[in-house]
Length: 382
Image (tube, rainbow, N blue to C red):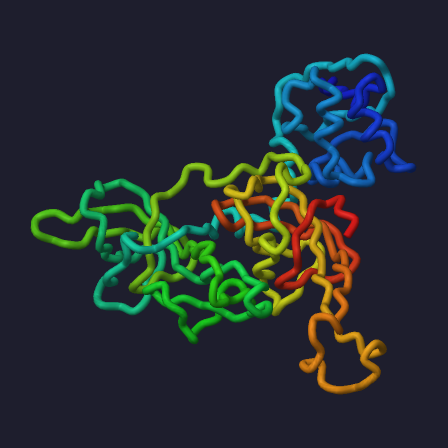
């Protein structure tokens, strides 16, 4: 059976953007590429370009392409240096578009995690049926703060897990500390948090937000009526258990958008502000396909698809040859110290953004990515 395909001629020599992109073409790039199920835009861009984050410039050279964000399995991408662009429109689609990054690796972070500025005033679980300590699917919990809730309304039960704080290197050094939160949102030395390691605060650090982990989902079966001060919520998801103190937020119909293209940051960010805050399931270190939390978000111009390079910050070392002694490094003043260059580690691509925090996937690297690493433009030379 004939299946319609779209042919995109992805470079036009008569545009300035084309010359920029042409210089970055892989020497072994294919003449054509058929999009397959399981591909990502990063993978596809990497077929043609040495630097996948230049992918948008190819599309800008082809204004006839109606929606460059949506590429489907079966589409044929053809690289040709012509003075025109020919586009064969596709027929009906039976599969989902190709996402920016592999969804299977980031799905828990898309569905089950979010970051808020504060948990004050959020409805919370005040008790569980029959005075139990934990509740699971099929059980009832009682919620304070849902005075106007109506039967049938859906809520996600979330738990504050980590407090994110931006480091302030000027004050001293890179503080690192696990900040698990109890039901009040205060630091707790109990169960380890979802992130195994988190960059901690210093004196003048800025609170970036509180990470909430989704525990379960439920439906209101009875509101706070007739003198009753708590609404009744029936848990209906076979997920994590719920405890007293967990918070509630309305269920979002579509909390994230997986269809985005890799691109460089849209605006410059002050050196020292953009850092790696945390590495999931690791102590301090991650590698390709690990998820990291970043200390920048939408307010800094960061959106889904933004690509950063991560750098180990260069040390300031004692100039011992100059002083000619082996005394303690603490005795060396600024004039007797040497600032070393930052060292490139990896490229990261943002896949979910909040106001002051974002989540990114490590796409490639030549050395491990660690908590506290500096984030720069992906083409930064140093």
